[in-house]
Image 1 (cartoon, rainbow, N blue to C red):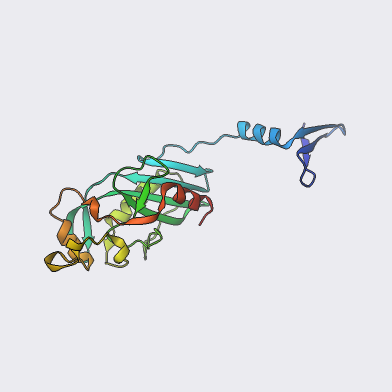
Image 2 (spheres, rainbow, N blue to C red; image 1 turned 30 degrees about the horizontal axis):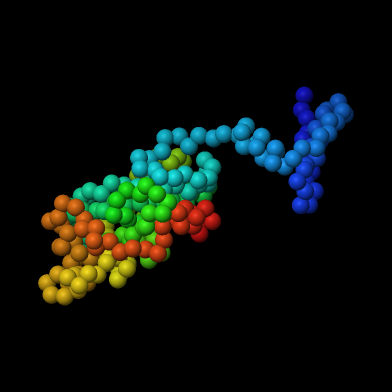
Length: 227
């Protein structure tokens, strides 16, 4: 037997009037607090994210629309620049995806001197370009796939690293400019020179990372507001 549920909430009220109308014409009514309704709905409606990518630090939202942060270990990777390929060190990188209706709405990308553990941890700019100063990735003409589950983002992260970089957005904010990188033979004023400087190193020199103006907590708040 099908029943109709009607919930009436007075303007600025703290209680709600609940009516259950049955097909036989009978009606049950009850007044309950709005907080109790919310708690009951929250406890009876659960969803599963499925398997989350390695390095996931947060997940906010539902199975369709959500904000997720994924960290990747500092290590050497093949870096494609123009017609060249070099095995260069990358710092710890952190991606944050806003997913809407199973599509990538925005991608943020930052780095850190170590894996992120606290909301107060400072985020740093990505040192190899292709990322705006506010942290949003410039995907260019890359066709991003539909995201049916969080694990699909593993392929998107790999796509970023395997893309051919072109030096776009390699700007003053991309890395910190200590005096030794500003003068003489060590002057780094292009992505090519950055690659030449780091390609023989085993780890990325974290003293070159340039602090952004936000922390992990700020990033989470930004994504929660769909900014």
